[in-house]
Image (cartoon, rainbow, N blue to C red; front, side, top):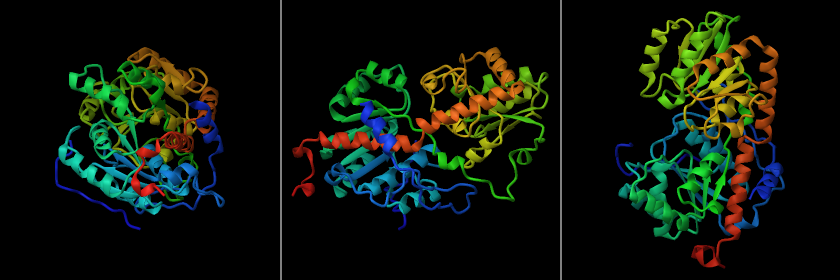
Length: 449
């Protein structure tokens, strides 16, 4: 089945125990790999899979039409894209139908992968948080498809989707907050968040610190659930093609070079400048060290990083790349991973490095200490502390046993807690709990009888 892609115009796009049991009970059976045309070393093998004797749960028989509204355009095949695919596959195994609505056309191979597991893809542009054309079109789709669970992701889509949930009387509405909302709020936004307490049946967030942030903004703590979304472990078991260039060959490094990596687009809060300065401090002590900034050629801050590299005189030791679709393969060949943000950011880059059994140095901000136990599954330093980061880098570069110990412990943490299988299982457990508690009079007429 081909993906359905629809655009309405060429607008500019500007309860823990049950959850843990659900995760432990999720199936590890895998389906056959499906490789994307033109993309090497990647597949969308199932991590949850369909068990031969799996039957749709009672709750999903009651409410089974799910729509995800996503406020960004998937332009790569990263961990969150992988999570959406695994989530869609598990929904199908449970008898649920899933529709994904994006604000722009997603990466073609990703759209096709979603369609192959029975999901439908729509594209409806979003210009702003209160884009009336988006709201009208989304309302039409929700009514046409008789959506039972409306789940919105990211601020650009969340506000409009919340209005649609009220307008259409959608039985269950889930708001998903992937980042901090900021400190300065307008009166309108304060009023909207107060209404959200009665609109949203559940608010997902990605860390405990973010949950505290949302509760501090006035959201009901009983309706806010922290859900870690980690990487797909299957991607870290794929072997490179025999004729593929190694990381060191591709970037002109020698086999003797120790490679430090940072995976992130170029933005000030990602801490690239701090990393560059810390790296420059250890180059005399470790002349064989090389730094690879994956994704740092993309973003408004990229030119500033290139200037800094030249001013520090480390141009021959540093490589900046565009966003890559083969990050798991690249991580397999590095020695140390660094994630040095100065404020809360996505934890996926950290979890991916841990999945690759690589030692991670990260900053002690936001939810990072929830994922990294300092000295056990990684090393933590204060944000913006160049000297501390340089010291941590030097420690790992000279201590192979520490690298191996931290890498193995990090991998175990991801296997037990931070991966797509656990995330999808936990999310669906929440869905089912919401369905069970949904009054009959809120269900759509087509489900009665």
